[in-house]
Image (cartoon, rainbow over all chains, first blue to last red; front, side):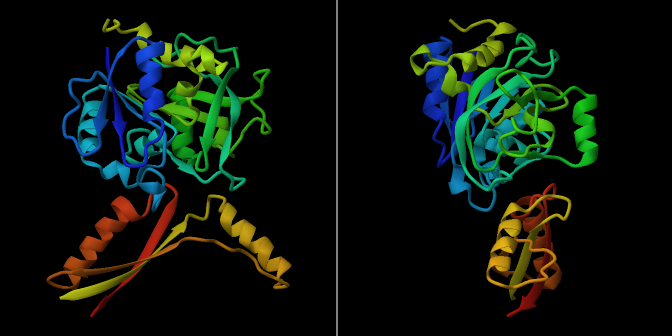
Amino acid sequence: MKFGVVVFPGSNCDDDTVFALRYNLKQEVVKLWHKDHDLQGCDFVILPGGFSYGDYLRSGAIARFSPIMNEVVAHANRGGYVMGICNGFQIVCEAGLTPGVLLRNNGQKFISKNIYLKSQTPHSMLTAGLDPDRALKIPIAHAEGRYFADADTLKALNDNDQILFRYCDADGQMTDAANPNGSLENIAGVCNAHRNVFGMMPHPERAADAALGNTDGKLILEQLLAVLPASF
Amino acid sequence: MKFIAAIDVMPIKEILDPQGKAVMLGLGNLGIQQIDTVRIGKHISIQLDAADEAEARTKIETACSKLLANLIMEEYTFTLQAL
């Protein structure tokens, strides 16, 4: 499988994501410049974390209109795989590829720390192979991570099993105290109705190398390989 | 013709506005009492060329609904003035 990591002005997790895919998962990966009009034959496009366009106006709002996003949206509409991590999640929400929006954290602060999350559904490529009872330790680093959707959308997300991850404590309890940012129903990640676009606020790519002392993120990223052949 | 649009983008009432809540506390500390709510949004000013007011209005509507406001979390209003 060939991965493409989009680089917007202000992206800052592009190199971490490329490293995790290339060295930890041994996959072919290219960077895609935001002004390009070509996905270079990538099967899987990742929008990385960062502060695209300085988070001006709203996080992800301006990046959504970068030239390459036309190709990314077309790829997603053809059934191609897209994943947004952190700022990338904000961008896929702004582009309408995943439902909902990310609001400023209820505590107003930028939060950078390890949190725990649990897989919520066996019905997505990203979570199918994860142990639903295991709390995974993954870092978050965001100021706008409070997941919000209107009541109808939230009901549809639950009814269609589109919620990928919820915040929990180290014991796997999904309590209010374990919700770092005020997200509705502790939601940390969702997918679209066709289950080919994924978005999550936590950073699995920052926990994918043994040298970092935490490889729970690698467990998540490895799911992307489970159903498709490796490229080499 | 030149027009100037004065656009206000506000968080919708259903969602918590933590900035507004923090400012409300500050206003209380300043000694200003009996404040019911504080909501904080954005004011955007755009100067543009258009053949007539209808065209200017269409352009600003598109700008607001596609980029300046995210209708899941915000609502917008604007006024248009010919220069």
